[in-house]
Length: 362
Image (cartoon, rainbow, N blue to C red; front, side, top):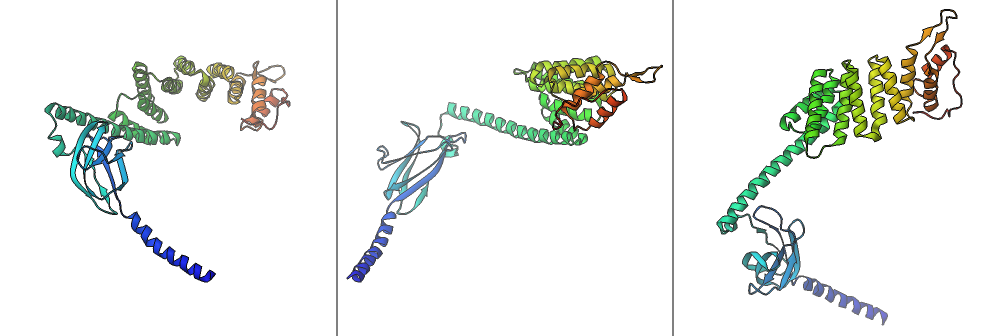
């Protein structure tokens, strides 16, 4: 009995499956894209199907991209009307046939000549003006994309010290858009790397002038520009100008003052400006006392002013030398200059402060 019942249920299932499959194919679908005369998508536009051109039987709404789709449509012939906004029909296709199981494509392209030619003269004129403006915007956007690519290339090249490559990219960029401060800034950095200091000064000053004169000055760009100018001035022995530029950078971005003054200390030390290096190190330490490098460079600058006692023949270091080296060792006990710092302390008869944590390394 159970075997017969199972066989009967199986036969019922076999008959039901094709019946259900057939039922799924009794309706039709629609899909398409809607766009206005300027080729912009009509977001939230409504596509309505009716048999009399008035009474909506099916309504489908376009998404933000102007795409729409619908299903469950009874096969037949319909008016397919586009409403840009509720109650405002803007386009219609008559006698659109829908057949069982098909997905009909029906686009509404309001930029087609057939549609545009029917517009009133004032609307056609406005449309042409809009198209011209859009073309200009698209061209500008393409230019911005190219400039961004060139700027990215230049920054990577400057970081890798491939200054010639960076300068080539930024020369092209500033020719395309000569009113962009950030492009002149990057060009100036590249020219500094090339040791073309006159060119770098011109580029960096131009960047600064452009940004300060803009409607929305950017303190980050101006601070970076002053920082770069400081390096150029230091390398050309214009110490007061270099100091003024680093001070300006620190004033523009107080949170980064320690970094700017550390840069000043490094550049001045590299160029052999002893007194200026000590002054810059003091500013860097005051702005951020947790960084080791300014202490080392201050100690290095001070020890260069050491003298020899004619009676004892011992090295006499200026006041503050031992403190500077010991503070460096406290902050960077395993730093690259730690052996030198310890050696100098020993030479001037000073003990190494052993209270610091030997695990630190800055």
